[in-house]
Length: 246
Image (cartoon, rainbow, N blue to C red; front, side, top):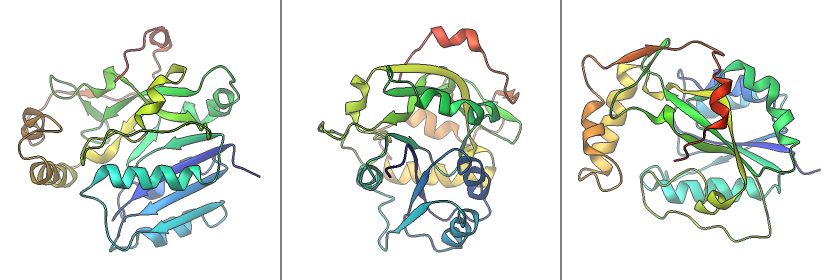
């Protein structure tokens, strides 16, 4: 039987970070989980196997990392996920989670026949309790797709650039969609170690700011950024009627 809801995730050296937490949450709502390990050198795969030992899953191991060519990695992720011919694909990174209320409601939305993509707001967490908001850090004001219906009989095209290419083919921008009020936390900025690693990556892969913003890259290491407190499940349901998409 084809999975109704499939989780697709890329991991690399996620030991002692957020992987165990997010997989523990996602395995309660997904029929199948597909993970691409992009050349981990730590116990990332062992962690996946431990958390998912009673969950339907598959782990693909890349012997050669595609980390410096994001579009190739995202294409691989999409091709592996769609090979299972799922009805819905939820594409998340290993440092992203929804607020708790979403996990109780997701099946309601995947039973919807009129909508082919669901969009959400993602908050860049600068600590366990606060997210960042300023001129460079306002991703949470824009809705982006994370959950899409798979249509096997149409061609899919990608934004072919090595960084910031998007996690889905650009084709899904033409899908019927709905913006949902459930928020996501992006935990990958929440420690100084994480921020320094991302800063070094962006400066190495995009030193001219061709694919992103040099101002944003430099702001990563700001000593006193403007932070706001995160309140779990403080859903602004009225905002569901307004959907500014990325």
